[in-house]
Amino acid sequence: MPKSAHSLSDMHVIVDIGGDRRSAAIAADLAATSGAHLTGIVIALEPLVPVYTMAAPIPTDFIVAAREAAIAEAKAASGAFEKLAGAAGARVETIVLASIAGEGFTQAVRSLRLTDLAVVGQDDPDRPEPMRQAVIEAMLFDAAAPTLVIPYAGVDTLRTSRAIVAWDGGAQAARAVRAALPLLVLAEHVLVVTVEEPSKWGDDVPGADIATHLARHGLDVEVRRLANGAGNVASTLLNACADEAADWMVMGAYGHSRWREFMLGGATRDVLAAMTVPVLMAH
Image (cartoon, rainbow, N blue to C red; front, top):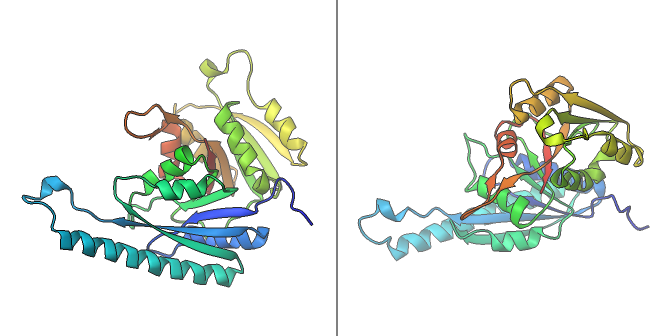
């Protein structure tokens, strides 16, 4: 029987080099539950020393050794991922990609452009993954992949019962909602929140249109306007997640124009830094 148009069939996850690989485990569980194929992407980044710290050129032996060590760590992470995914009953494959720091993630971006959902872990300040912020930016902006970011602490499983949708009527928010439908249809209750920004609304206050759209998908939807007393959209959204005991959140990812690289917009950057629930983003 063919799958519904709003189901997950092809998923990807960025596999952490170290740690407990929480995001990979959650992705594997979701893939097993939804019957999706899961591709684990392991990025080997050589820890090159900046040239300004060296009085002489970096020795070739050091570069080769660093590259070999990074690839060895990536292969070990690949094996650990396949083991945990197998235990979850997911259908998986892994791709190990070698990328010199600073040169981008061309191969990963190419793989992620055709995915129903990409999963990645939030950057953990106590156990940072190489260039994690840059990886997330590449997933959102270069690959335009629907991206589910998993907090580094406090979330062991993905619960979908209570969802919050951050809505401002914009294109990014609409893309995020469309990308989130395979998970939103599993929710028992969806709270659509609009953070008060009258200067951006014009004559129309957003909310009613998205409620109608989601209700047509059979969802139990509530719309609520949130005062932005502190003047910080991210804090207002995260406080709503806590107050409503939300399991996860959907929001558009915003970026400013770039000179050399994309810079995440303020609300997106702040949510990624302080998130306490999984957040599905799209740009």
